[in-house]
Length: 176
Image (cartoon, rainbow, N blue to C red; front, top):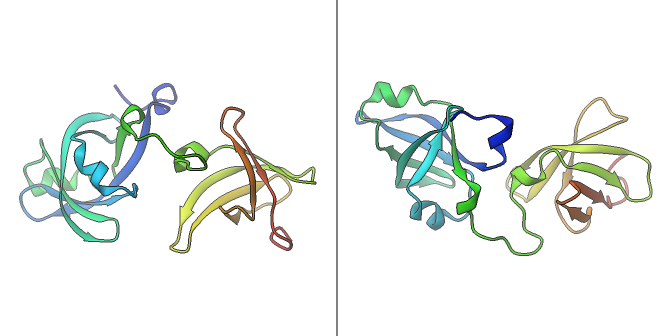
């Protein structure tokens, strides 16, 4: 199948292979989803840019978002090493419906930024959570570098996914 711009919108990244684990082809994975129980109910995933469909069993939770997993076709340490750095995807149609004001990171990336009361514009480069809450990495048209905006009600006025825009209402001093 292969990962292209055309089918990219049908998938969401749910994890990444960090490295092999043990001698039987198991892998250490960082998982991006919060609901691990949901992740464990699914069996079919897609791995790498070639989107190879495979079954993944999440076997053991090590810490925070790190898991030991087994991929059906991966039986040796060498095969597992070959997956290092590959992303794990899931078809969006299997994702649970979100509540109002909940968003998947991937849906926020690339949205156009408008700032309340300003002509300044930009776009969302990425979304992170460094432990104290979600933040948007934003590139504004008049800056050479990106800035981080807390993803909270104090700084986000509205999000319009249909029109691919976010209205920022930044707290005083955030953009200076």
